[in-house]
Length: 392
Ligand SMILES: Nc1ncnc2c1ncn2[C@@H]1O[C@H](COP(=O)(O)OP(=O)(O)O)[C@@H](O)[C@H]1O
Ligand SMILES: [Mg+2]
Image (cartoon, rainbow, N blue to C red; front, top):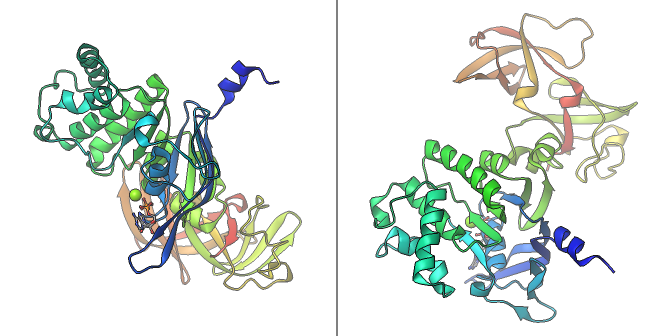
């Protein structure tokens, strides 16, 4: 038998197994909002859920919170089953002990800040004195000490969002769900709140899911990242893993900026991949195993035999493109082309350039601030920074 203490330590805080949720449209058609999603979150871990509008992020959170009843699957929180379709088990939201924070602050205007924040405690029958003490403590944690008696609509957007944060944390839930919590506040407040959220998470140690369409949010706040596509998990990993080795073009484009270069043929040479691309000959270093594109084995693309027209694409991050002033690349240099700066954008410590190489335009991030539009440049990319993926 397992040591029960050991198993408790490694038991996931959230464990979703093959969760599916379908909705009936008014027209009678069915939408699959969540499609067999399995995901587990370790104690203290904050996992970001990213993806475009409509990919199922909110539905996933609502299923966890008990606000939506999945059609299939199981959900365990801190080792307890709160949903199990086979056993017809469904724990209602108020008995799941989950904190939730939404994009709309969802504060009650007729209640003071303290009454709003204390609401989850009153629902659990905590005494008035204890509630007051815990409300003051959590308000201090989110930087709102002394505002207990204000009505929420007298506060700024950022402060209202802090009230909402305090309310989601006041009952000390082991699991907190965030649904685009920072997308309603302006950019500066967002950065400030983001940093504080990281600190509060470190201090309080809750586990949770953090839904956002802002990739900076996702990368800075969270330990791991889940990319959703059409209700399914497309990739899951640390922000660095997902950024450096996106499994698909969809992931690469969603997590960070990326240039796409069309590929018409691909062949292996040793461990490198030789591409015939819109940039001409393009060498890519050995590719990690991806479901999407392995030119050597993916028979559906026909890549191994040479032709890959429209099936493959080469992905290059803007910060991996090197620019040097000059007319022509050195003779025989791999992945080097003559280009022209078409456009430049000042972005603080970085410059963003649009560089034209024949018919191809590459977006480039560079620390070199000196290049003006019209400048002739030599453009180069190291083979290890060329990612070959399925174009779809
Ligand atoms: N109550 C509902 N009734 C019908 N369709 C819904 C309902 N809620 C969500 N959907 C559909 O489910 C899909 C996922 O929606 P949602 O989870 O809100 O996505 P996201 O939060 O990623 O934008 C969408 O196609 C949406 O239209
Ligand atoms: Mg949503």
